[in-house]
Length: 172
Image (cartoon, rainbow, N blue to C red; front, top):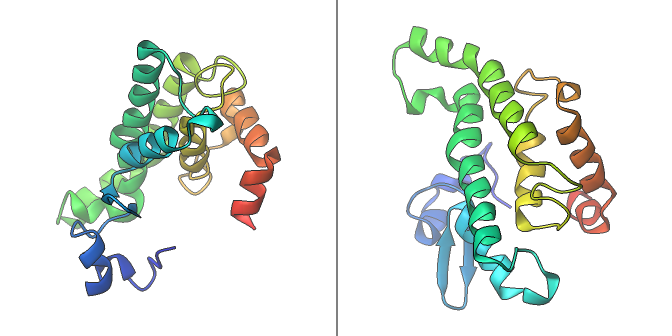
């Protein structure tokens, strides 16, 4: 676990693991992996018995598509709330970006409700690593000023995730 309050991700010890100074980073016997979609693919591939990824080429690509969307669009929309200074120096520009977070996150989840979440899980009826990622980013909605009740499929997904014993252990 990385302590953001103390900027641990910028410490020399952490930078030795991940010179990007960002999370996540996963140290494996083969080397260090960074970027959430890469880590999720690694977990799915190293635990095949858990069936955490689709087995068809299209299904796998669809999973990667979702993970990429969560990383490159949803996470960035959320990041403007607390880290807008990454994209602008002008206080007015920063404030303008922060004001857009709620609307941008709502747009992202409206898309997710329409194009994913068509079954019990993000990609249908099979639980995948994408569900863990979606669970995480959906947990940001409240602090981003978005009422999750606007998104009933996302809200139901959150409840199904919270019922999973592994999620309960991870959150304890």
